[in-house]
Image 1 (spheres, helix red, strand yellow):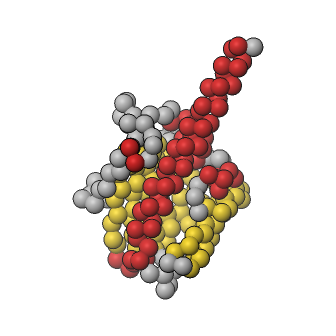
Image 2 (tube, rainbow, N blue to C red; image 1 turned 30 degrees about the vertical axis):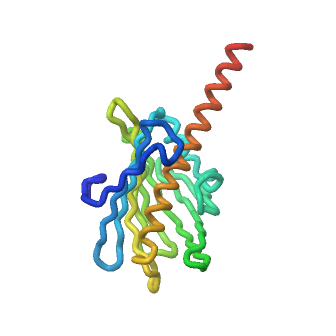
Length: 194
């Protein structure tokens, strides 16, 4: 599956999110054998890619602004490869669902890509990538995830929740990147004025 190259694309209007006119989200979900789902969510926005990269690689801070992510902790670093532990929780159909994963994440700085795979965790499969791109008129942030729930997890029941959560996560990354960019701009003005 190429990034958002399928028929199940769902654009969300910028007016619905209170963001600028350029902002749009596209989503795609593909059902794979064995209860696997491949999801892709892409956000177009007007923001310098450096701020998105800075946010995505601030591993210990991710749980401060990404909804339902209760813990994100850098375990180790070996060059451009890092070990990361994350735990998420949410209420679904009146039940509290928790999931923990240990990921091996590779930073591809030149391509502005973070690819990850699960080393161990509460899923049978959990792998994907963050990709920052652009076409000259806008920056794109793409999140791709292939997930297979643990035995007994009804993945079909939580498909829509997964879609909503992934879109929400991209918006959270966007807001944090915008906040950091604005803070840096304010700091620059203060230094110039001083």
